[in-house]
Image (cartoon, rainbow, N blue to C red; front, side, top):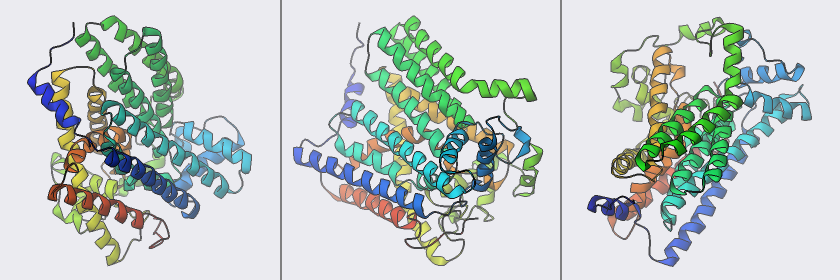
Length: 461
């Protein structure tokens, strides 16, 4: 029997489906969507060409891993190099490309791998838009906003230009959670659902084989499926889907960690001797206050090694998600950089606040009914934040506080933030004008600041 529709559910549907009734407005949003995708793609392509080969986080160390694989496909010992403990999927892809263009010169292979990361990142953003459209059909304004939030997210732009695994891992995780969420709003016969679950497991397994955080998709999907099965009184059916996800993800991504356990006695290394120099970094210890303290000075002094941000995990995360707190992309000095940073960080408060409001709506929908994608997205956010807190607690150094570590939850961020932003940009009036103006200013400022070489050439620490 279908669940009864309550007044609260109707009200939630009305707010969620607040879309333009004017076909012209819808067509305009679709055109704008193509435009922002083109701008975001060109920005990343330009950065792939212009960004120096070994700028970015650990790029030179990552290339050492690739060179090792170029000599032979045997995985190196985790403690033999800075990046050698990482899962191998990204590095193996890069080694395949390097062997095709020559392993002696890094620039061609690094450039090609940047293109792979860019393509994966854009595909993940397209999957986000597809899910928003599926859940909120006809609301092209919300689809446009969801795309823009990710296309002009500084951490995503920076990681697309860097020679590292962050964008590939987050893209695979996004594909997995998008497909799993889609299955909750698009029911099929069991065989089709089993095949879709195998695809979820494949993407999740590849994400896990790219970065440890990729595994978080698996418990998020399993938890959502089991709760959905209980609600629908179809626990056996959804248990089968969970088994498929876990088995496929375990085979595809889990073998690397099982290998570590057999050879070295741990699933994933921590505090290796090769990383000992990190112990010299500040602050060197964490307290609970570090997770509650958010200094207002972060808007005017957005460098991660500043005295205030050193003891603020969420402040440091915010300035590295929405700006460049580590100054790997932007110049290390100059008042203009900080003025731009202040503008971007203040404007970014709008989508950040919208995310928390949208997530609150998702929690209410989850309590009221089933058949919506909110539950797996909320679980992924919770697991990502919990993992990030644990990581920064065990590794109390400024270099481990990075907004890019949260990119695995990029789909939930865009999904939930776009919901209230779509409402605020509807109709006419001051709220609509102010919201569109702020979002446009944010996108424009990010484009100017993070198009490498347009305004400045970065410091490349």
